[in-house]
Amino acid sequence: EAGVAQSPRYKIIEKRQSVAFWCNPISGHATLYWYQQILGQGPKLLIQFQNNGVVDDSQLPKDRFSAERLKGVDSTLKIQPAKLEDSAVYLCASSPDLLYGTTYEQYFGPGTRLTVT
Amino acid sequence: QQQVKQSPQSLIVQKGGISIINCAYENTAFDYFPWYQQFPGKGPALLIAIRPDVSEKKEGRFTISFNKSAKQFSLHIMDSQPGDSATYFCAASNSGGSNYKLTFGKGTLLTVNP
Image (cartoon, rainbow over all chains, first blue to last red; front, top):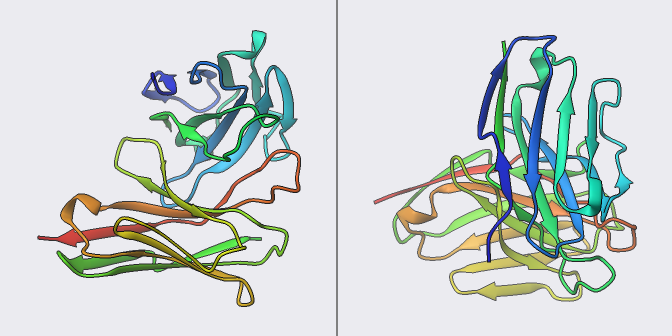
């Protein structure tokens, strides 16, 4: 079974520039999560999708961050404009359908390391 | 407000020793407590998880101990090996919510010396 795929793996941009990250979840997983992991901290949920609908985006800085999951499969997270404090690893995770799953396990991708200079 | 507090921040153990990482939570609605293991350059991977209806769960060398009254849970790694060197995160979620949102601790960097 293929895991969660993310690209790019690394990105360096200057502040005020824009950047986009892509995630392809495990096939058949209805739920997709984007996390921000700042160095030395645990992952923090930014947004959660159930199929192509948003379940939770309470911690997403909506003035600069946006995310979409068209067709309920892969997803894109965008930052525009980026700030220095956005430097972090952005993790995508997926899990089986909440309606039918018997586990809360979230499967994480390798992440995209963003450096804003 | 940090809802899950994890300690220690870092831990050095000799090969064959026992590694112990502790977490405390505040939200009494939490009812699912997983531990994740993360190697450099990789995403976190589920190691073991527990629900509050049991006080202990063991899988191989890894054991979770859970104290509901104290709102604490801990990870014990028996016979620690150099390959266990990684960052460990505790987390908690409320299955009564609509999204099973995980709240993570800040992580513990474990180093197992050969």
